[in-house]
Length: 338
Image 1 (cartoon, rainbow, N blue to C red):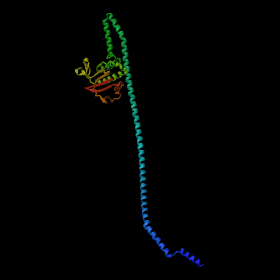
Image 2 (image 1 turned 90 degrees about the vertical axis):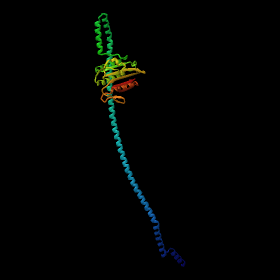
Image 3 (image 1 turned 180 degrees about the vertical axis):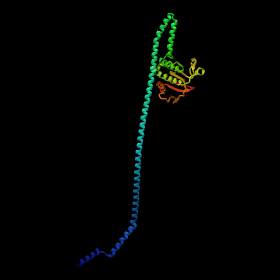
Image 4 (image 1 turned 60 degrees about the vertical axis):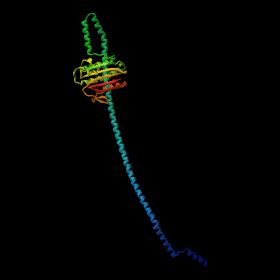
């Protein structure tokens, strides 16, 4: 019994609370908490506060950067839309301009082609008329000679002379001059020389070329017809004046002295010769209006003009030839070698 009581007391001593010890432990706890709060929690809190402030600043900067990025993106997208709209506008304008220009070019080309076609048809028709007329003269020449021979056999000399005079008058009214062996060149030169005579234009022609048969008659017709027509049109504007040829004009033609009295203000010279197996053409004319040249080629600002020059150049280039247009001492020169 006593032993049990003793054990009970020992247990109470073990589990019992000693007041002073408890108070000391409480005080020790508060002291530890104070020390921890003062020397441990405060630096940690300050560090955490700094980190929180830094995080808040980074978040604020990130949000500002995000807003700025969003604004830049919107501005970029707007600029891209405006650029696309401007590009589409430029492309549409370019397409419209290209369409208008192409239509204009096609229209001008069609008009020029039609004009060239009409001109060529007229030249060919004129050449055909002269060929027909020449064939008629050749056909009738036999009958004329037979009649004249009959008159001579009958000693009817007066009748023969009258008949010959009548034939000469008829031939002079529509004369085809034989400048060379090429009938096409003779026909076209005769046609335009007769036209020049109507405008009191003195003409001087020298054709010594022997290789004219190497070129198509239509090309020769286009070349000479356009060149002579331009020369006649230029001379028509020149005031007329009659005078005798002097030695200074001999530089234009080797046979200038053979022509006697001429119109010194309206003159066309034509020289066609062979040189180094090439057909060389030299045509000069006087003029009143100073020609306008673009890239050494005469041009005209009048509607429908300038086609003849393009036709001339087209023929020359067809034969890989060379050409030149220029003025010197009051004369317009057209020179070509084909």
